[in-house]
Length: 179
Length: 176
Figure (cartoon, each protein chain N blue to C red):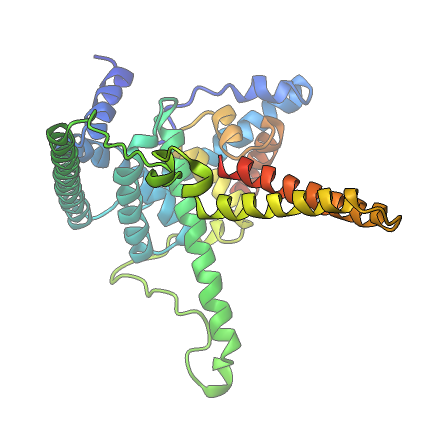
C-alpha cells in the first residue's frame, strides 16, 4: 500500500469515527504541527494548547475534508488556530492597556505564558522573531507542512511569484541573521 | 522535515529571472531551509500526545452517544407521529366518510303552502288584496265623478297603486 493509499484509508477510518485511525493521524502529524506552532509562538505551553485544539478541530471537522492534499487541509486549520490565538492575544493586550495597568503598578503587558521549566530558547527562535510575522509564518508553513510552493500559494490565496519571492527574501534574511 | 515537496526552485525562479539569478535564488532557499533542518524544534511530550489521544477517544464516545440519543429521539418522534396518524385514521373510518346529514327546510309556512285560498289564509296577502280592492273602488268612483278635478286624483291614485303593485311584486320576488 502506498503512503497516499494508506493515508486515504486512515482518513476514511477517521470519517467513520475510528479512534485508532485518529490515533495514527496524531502520530503522523503531531510532530510537524507542534514544530509549526512552537516556531511561531516560541512557547511550549502555548504550543501544547494549540496542538490539542488542532486535533479537537480535526475530529470535529473531518467530515468536511473532501479530498485533495490532506496536509493542505490540516495546515489550513492549524493556520486558522494560530491566527485565532494571535487575535485573542491582541484582545487581551488591548484590554490590559484600556485598564491602564501600568499606572496601577500591576502586570504591565499581556501575561505571556511562562516558559516551561528547562526550556531554552534556541538561537534560531530568537532570529526568527526578528522576521516579520507574515514571512515567519510562510517559512514555517513551507517547512513543516511539506506542501509544494504552488499548494502554499493556493492556501494563502496569493500568486506563486509572490510566495516564492517572500520565501526567498525571508530565508535569505534568516541565513544572514544566523551568521 | 520538508522532504515531501518536490519543488524545483531553479525552474520556478527562471519564470521570473535569468538562469544565473535563478540558481542563486534556489541556493538561498536550500541553505535557508538547511538551517531549519539543523535546528529542529522540540517535539510534543509523550504526555501531551497521550492526552490528545485520550481526548479524541472521549470526544468520539460522546459523539457516538449523541448520535445514538438523537436517533432514538427521532425514532420515538416518528413512532409517535405514526400512532397519532393511525388513531385519527381509525376514528375517521369508524365514523364513516359518507354519512353527511342534510337538513331540508322551507321558507314558506306550511299553512300557506297547503292553503286552497291563499288570499284568505295569508293575513298579509288578504290585507293587500283588500287595499287593492278599496283603491279600485275609489278609482271607479272618481272616474264616474263628473267634476273635472277628478283627473288629478285618479292620477295620484294610479301612481300609488303602481307603487304598491311594484312593492308587492318585489316582495314576492324576495319571498320566492
